Length: 286
Image (cartoon, rainbow, N blue to C red; front, top):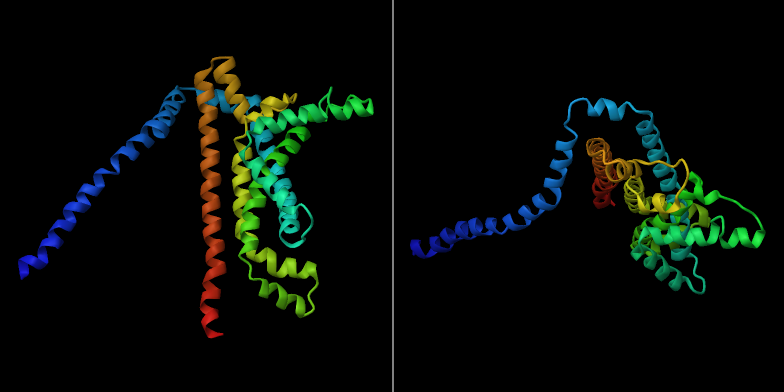
């Protein structure tokens, strides 16, 4: 009887040890595709004196400031516009709202340079707007034009998580708040937005990370004086063949992205704990 009972237990560690071998192929793939290129970049950036030369240049400081300024401004614009569109689509029914939602989903599947190309046809120097008004505005080729294009392209990344969060709010909760005399604005501020705060924060963090690394919109816009870190990496590595300098800037870009991601994870964990912890303790008492 003892042998019968212990045989499955003896085979279980063998199966577990065999299962560990299945981890090796995807792990090797990750090392080959992601880790090895990063190590090559770090190796190129390890040349003596290159860090001081690159980080001390005025061109790098201007590109760093421009990258952060455009990313933060675009993210704020996406949050405001995305929250407005999500509230309208979720709580203000109107004819064609379903088609608007599908259009937003379609934008998510488009490459970023198509938005910039459309902006060029509409607002470029020889675009529809200047031709109709007889003007020669070059707003598209300024930092404001880059920010407008990024807001247009990245706003759906805020709208879609918010719509998913709004769909989880019980309608009875909204009806009770309205029956108690709360105005629509107060219901939105006190009931809807607190429930959707994690989704809003997640969408904003994603947009900030994407705009921080955006290359296609800035390049296709051709904005004068708009030099961001991705464009500077392209210029150093492809145009001037300064691979060590491009590796240093790419390392800084990777560090910024990882720092932003870790900060988001930490803040998100604290927010979710602050929302779920006390509520979980109070809810049974009710």
